[in-house]
Amino acid sequence: MNLTQTLIKPSNKIYVAGHRGMAGSAICRALSKAGYSNLLTTPRAALNLLDEAAVKNWFEINKPDVVVVAAAKVGGILANNNYPADFLLENLKIQTNIIETAWRSGVQRLLFLGSSCIYPKFAIQPIKEESLLTGALETTNEWYAIAKIAGIKLCQALRKQHGFDAISLMPTNLYGPGDNYHPSNSHVIAALLRRFYEAHQNNAPSVTCWGSGTPRREFLHVDDLAAAAVFCLENWDPSRIEAPKDQSGEPLHYLNVGSGSDVTIKELAELIAEKIGFKGLINWDSSKPDGTPQKLLDVDQLQSMGWSASISLAEGLQQVIINLPSALAPSN
Image (cartoon, rainbow, N blue to C red; front, side):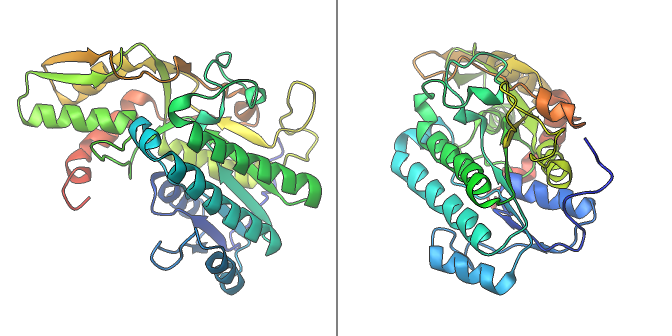
């Protein structure tokens, strides 16, 4: 991969949609660190991304050169199960409004953030990019996944038909600064961190976790994702001869981003308990759903371009736990 000339410039106006979310805020930090100071952000109160007319008007006024789509309605198994229509409709509207408007407005580059939940529930592990649409989805988050698949395919279609320079990244399960610690609508690491922290604070004798603890999951610190996003914005052009290709030799338009290793949920819970200092029993409620048995991404394609994750799970959890009291404060 030729890294001598980057595909974006420090002078570019870069719009990060979803800049207050975990991924978006991390990408803003990484862009600033890399010397991109002309960042455009707007709070939800000032721009409703569900409103197509408002999005078009914002693009006409601000004229971004580069767009990062990190805005989405997100949540865990319970939220997806309770609000399926919201997850499908809102994500379709948000991403379509931004991507189509970016294309029509002459944006030079666009990066769309997908999710590893786009892949089939029983995909061969580790999951290659070519696994997309080869089997049934995990039913616990299929609504969110279908919206994300539509976003990936929209980016691919606009590139194919109109030459729009849109790329997509599929991150694995994320954790880190800015995570959502809601008691019922959070993802697995945030949920476990909250549960074990509160149990430790209250001297609880035990903690009960959902499921059997046997599913295997891969986790990526959000700062690693942000580093990968900047790397790909700067260096990944799917049209280059040396760019990653699928098994049939066709250029890939979306790439996996992960750590390359996984742990069982039981191992994760035990690691979090150890880091927090919880000494009680860990019980498992097998009446609750486990979700996908294993989800480990094949990250060979991104690694072939020269990028790999640098923050280990133990190191990343330690960083998060240091700031956990403030993250769980009522104001947050």
